[in-house]
Picture 1 (cartoon, rainbow, N blue to C red):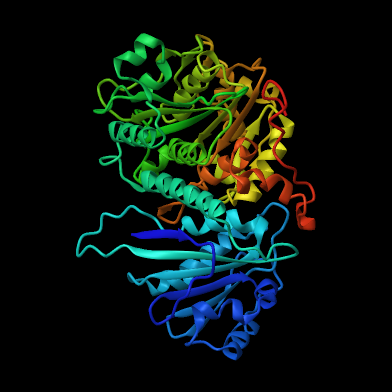
Picture 2 (cartoon, rainbow, N blue to C red):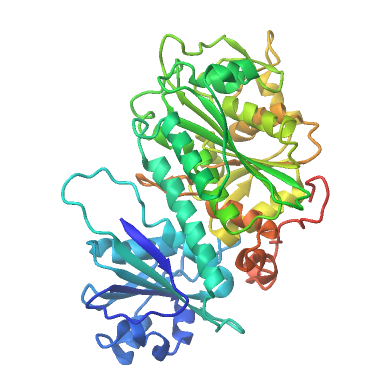
Length: 531
């Protein structure tokens, strides 16, 4: 277990006592005078040794996400160079390479020694860098044996670039800490297996976050879902020992003029239901709550740092279990939207719970902007890859804003085609308003899955709808990444009272040429959630 501390100045440290990593793009590291780093390297590493090590960092001429590293003093100090290439659909902060640099140096050393990481970067990349480091330090472990002590990982920043020599402020460090806490909370919940993270325990986490920000959640669970008309959520989770639920946390500050709803898929385990997964595809399905976990972490961080508009976090929770009460293929459920759905694949369950969630956001919460986040389709990883979430939206300006926020946060996104006229017919049913799974699995599966959710919000919805399919980026290897927390904080940064977050839009006007097509999120002065 590690405690992360974001520092406002380069700390005094000896590599004999704390393992040290200096990391950044090589040209940036070379700009820094050694005196600014001597606090963490002396007396073990002198200036000449440091310069020789930096000069030794080499990269291939072929674009790569690999970093270059060199030890400075035994296993006590390292320098790492981030790759020189960050192309137009990557973040200029190189967050994935930064995470690799930390893992390949400090992670390889291991142990419970305290650590210090000095990130050399432009200030506009500080938030993405801070978030990337948070993803490297997971909180969940069930390993037996002697309990290791909690080590302290101090993260310092040395800024380069014109006007960026001022140190990190207390407020900026606080925002980074809030983001890191949200990221690590989301990752912890996704890493935890269903026997320890079933719907009732997930609800306990919702209540805990509510207590922290002084908000009491609304919870509708079990048979009450039927009474209220939530046929989608109930139909997915009714066979499980722990009952399905809809939970809502609502932040409603005075003076708010806009209402935003974040709706998360919280399938705590997905067996596939009666359309059961095989032994190769079922392991890892504890991660199917990644969307709801990310929204919980993001809500905690956003409200903690001050959010000027109405913000609702909606959690659609269920375990897609097998049992006598399980939904069968051919069953028909009536959703909160009033629409009927013929089930032709019980393993297409995430869209069912989210259909109820987004309908609630429109009908009851009167949301202007609805974001749903979900580990929705395996096809997402094929469509947009391991690092980029699939993005589907009815609003072109917000599509651009999402891509910007992805690069600013390190949680990358890439658009999927939004053409209901081409794709929604895949759900045609002879006996209900729609089926829940497509007829042709070769026809933009990820777009189709998102459109199913959109149909329950209503294609006539006058506001902005944003769907984020995070199936692939929610984990790397066998660990959760906490994907989505930093993205939501950046996407809605114009509503934040944090100077660091609200300043991201203006700071990214001075971008690298690769990001010339990026633009800040639509102004909060626009009406009806439209950008």
